Image (cartoon, rainbow, N blue to C red; front, side, top):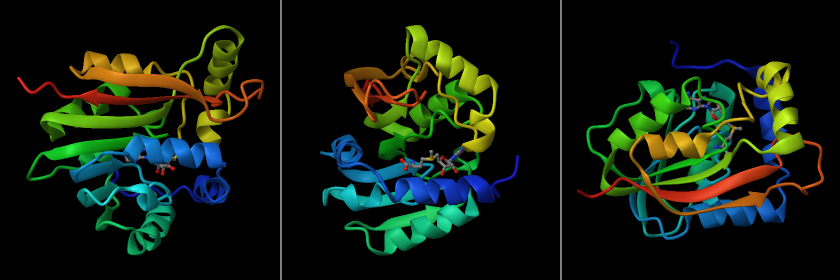
Length: 211
Ligand SMILES: C[S@@+](CC[C@H](N)C(=O)[O-])C[C@H]1O[C@@H](n2cnc3c(N)ncnc32)[C@H](O)[C@@H]1O
């Protein structure tokens, strides 16, 4: 598996989209990071949209972003971040660290990895006991939206959007890996009536048990 992704179409699209986020989305990003402290791993940083929202209690962020154009944007964002941020072009599956992290941040990325169960197990192993996973992720809906998501996932959506799969049971993967979810809710990133498979997100905090 290569560690450096070349996806010019998605990189251009995501750079445009992430530059025009709604105030509601910015609030969700900020909430996802609030109260974090210590050493943090951010998975799939994109253009580095989260970086501005890290609280000063975070001492260091290591951000992995394998798409080289997005990693370049992330490095620009890191230069203006309120906390020290280092960007690498590893896929998370290839990334290893000498020391465990206090927290890991995933936003809009667990829908894009090939093996969500494997990646979430890996993230569990990279946290210190008592460390936390913060997530803001697209998740599988129900009813008509689930049908729309399955259709999108089987057709062009993943190919156009960097392997994004909208009908993922990401929270089930998080629990199955051994995490305890202690605070989670669902939110609308776009109006609930919007006929888009990614309108709904899950925002949550999951802890690697200390014992
Ligand atoms: C939809 S973007 C979200 C970017 C960012 N997390 C955000 O919240 O704006 C998904 C990102 O995950 C990255 N990604 C996809 N597969 C990955 C993997 N296996 N390891 C690390 N990053 C990955 C993509 O390159 C892309 O930048």
